[in-house]
Amino acid sequence: MTVMDDWVTAVCAELDLDPAAVPVPAVLDLARDVAHQVLRPGAPVTAYLFGLAVGRGAEPADAAARLSALATAWPVELGAEPADPAAP
Image (cartoon, rainbow, N blue to C red):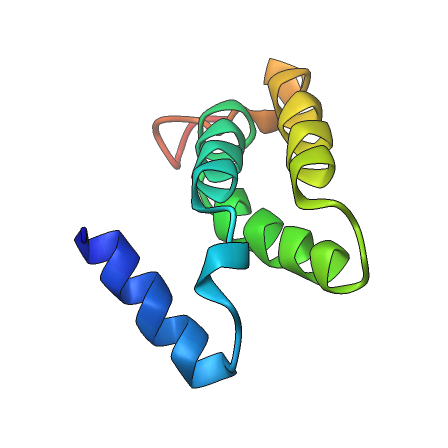
């Protein structure tokens, strides 16, 4: 087992969830797409929103694919943050 497997198993035990039902690769891919295409702090927030949607019955693979597509199509000018905080 990997550290990720151990962590997911521990979290699932704490929250009374089935670790086999956790789509780890889909969540990681989604977080990567949002962090790289939109903005880094958007990744955990999007993962949370993804979890809410799945908890309400959304199919995980479909929801992750839709959100990844949204992130990869996100206009760069909307997601860009200046490298220098003093820059306009």
